[in-house]
Length: 478
Image (cartoon, rainbow, N blue to C red; front, side):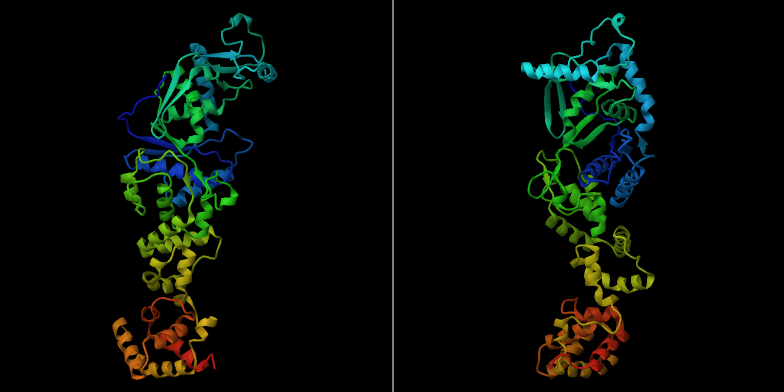
């Protein structure tokens, strides 16, 4: 038994998370790969919530998945499908296999199965359960609850022609007769996932390689129903920087944590796309480029490693690439994710002129605000200790002398720099002797954008007012 080759059918992919918690970073990457593959080929990307485990599933977790996907910018076609709501269809398929002879009633109890396995272990035999009811005469069936098992082939092999892992060959004598319908009448996940993928016309199943072992068993249902098998691509999981499976010790695991830390969604999309997939040496790219470039051949077989330094680098590149409106929208989204007060209009108006100065050097939205501090600060400007040292007696004198020149100067960068340079030259000092005190007066810090750029952003009146405050306060050092 071999799964189907590539076809020319319109691409339909899906993301099928279980609503038992947050949207895991690994799940987010799986969703992204499916989304990119479909969107890049004009296909459909569907969302299915696999909520058959009613005890562990919750509406809060479902909403968290929706929110995480929306923040990441992954839209899906149509309404999200609830797997639990399709239980009647799953039952219907189980009975159809039973009617065709591809499945059978198994009356073995859990105690029977465990007794078989204990005996097998004691005798050194395989513990793979072979039901005595597989070929039993229906006349011998008891009036008792039964499970429905699909009949696995007893010889030969199953080949999974995986687009990432290559051909995966499994001996059929290693496959058990998978339970499709439990003795209480409820369908198993292994049946439901196949029925749903078929009914939703999924052409490509792109999922974590932890599902690879399930695939051969799920293919039994496709064979029993005479359905086309989708194209499989099992992607390696994400590991921590130490090469071990992701856990809390590695840092942020949920996509909402990345939103709360202030990474732009575009940067996280770029980073996750690059995490286990490559397009030559390209590291930083737009989402449109990712849609054009993404393919299954570019996915590696080895586990990808989470690397926050690389994420910071990519994020910094994207911050510089984003237009001002997108930056403002992203900043507001971060404040919401981090449960911070929303930026008011006055703050936005003060921030916008500063964005061209600071966005190329910021890696996250919190860092963007920090670098734009000079534009958002209110008088009197608080001085950091190092900045205060810039405002000694000589520096205060120079600022006082500079003030009337600034009152009459044309307010453009070149003129402002020329004005300060001329004054420095008249004192026989370098421009830095004026720039340092100016920076302290304008920003209260020793690290900031160019003082002349800051003067343009805050304007003539605010610049003169801040310098005036520094002069009136007087020297900060003896």
